[in-house]
Amino acid sequence: MNSSKNFPIWHPFTQHAVLPDMVHITGGEGAYLTTKDGRRIFDGVSSWWVVTHGHCHPKIINAIKEQAGRLDQVIFAGHTHDPAEQLAERLLELTPSTLNHVFFSDSGSTSVEVALKMALGYWQNIGNKDRTRIIVLENGYHGDTIGTMSVGERGVYNAAYEPLMFDVTSIPFPAPNDDDATLAALEKACKAGDVAAFIVEPLVLGAGGMLMYSPDTLGQMKAVCEAHDVLFIADEVMTGWGRTGSMFACEIAGIEPDIACYSKGITGGSLPLAVTLCRSEIFQAHYSTDRSKTFFHSSSYTANPIACAAAVANLEIWRDEPVLDRIAGLAGMQHEWLVRIGDDERFENTRQCGTITAMDLKVRDEGYLSNVGPKLYAFFQERNLLLRPLGNTIYVLPPYCTTQADLDNVYGAITDAAEAFA
Image 1 (cartoon, one colour):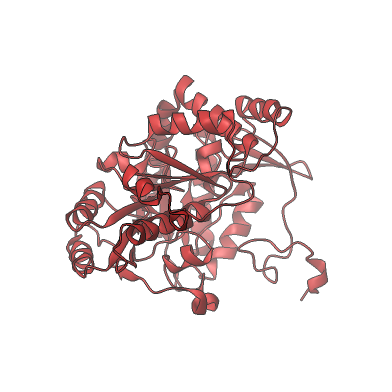
Image 2: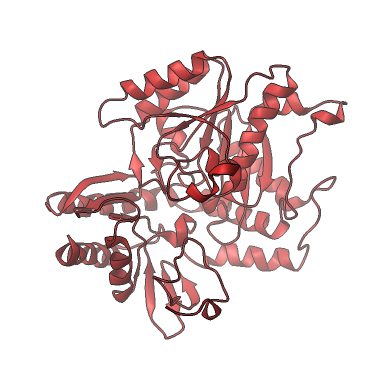
């Protein structure tokens, strides 16, 4: 085994004893990354689901350059700036009309932490201090900070940190074509009277295995929460910005969350930024001359001007270019390949939501720690493809500039991987 001294950089979600060598990337353009040794790698996971229009989109890069020469950073407590003001205004135009306030942060995990604190603070400040419990959906994943781990699935991701996490109520993931158990469990939990909020990834559970459920189920879960005055938190960190076929996943179900979390694609994948939007009632519960009711949250780089400028440029691309048409085209091309994969008996549970497809390779040891996972990753790397399977689950989540030829290459490699490992 290599000495730990050979790994001065400790990489995320990486077991260095199994993956000792990192791929050195020197550039990116469109759907491709360039390596130090001159190879071009197709980015089939949008660099962890953040890149939407492609790497180094000129409009976004130019906005970053211009803002960097004007204002790089300023404390956001007691101050504001044009990029944040413009971004907030445009976000409120795009998102449900019931969401009236924008809180900036710097990562998806943090945006969820903010949402949880908003929910708890709301009930505390209006005098209902018994509302402290959070309901979660089985197999969910919301981040790697303490609060987000607490509301995520308990397992290999967070087993070592169990002493730090708070207790939640988990309801079962909807069974195919049968959500009765899920809705009954949610109803029972809400009736207890101590629930502050229900948090869910709309339509697609990302790191939990790209698990998908219907818009109708999402709508019914929202209805249950409304009936019991439980705040509904939509974690759209991954599902937002077109991934599910519309700008936001909640649109497909026709629902409006009480609190919504957006990140990843908000800057087109160029810079870290996140926002948490909420209803006026939640803001008003914290609005008081009593300073103890202040919303106590921030990070040093809250609403960084350069990141906000990148996000404004991203929204201009959505406004000026046929992005939804590209998404529809990409989804259609993905569907054609998924039909073929679905006829291959070496795969099971083929599924799609918008631009996201997933399939489970039939192996003896299934799950996130399946031995086939690292083998698949290495196999795809040899084909100059960045695909990062979740154990035996292979998923494709590419930028919206992806072509038919790109997908032919990707799915051809997936078929060859089944030949080698199924």
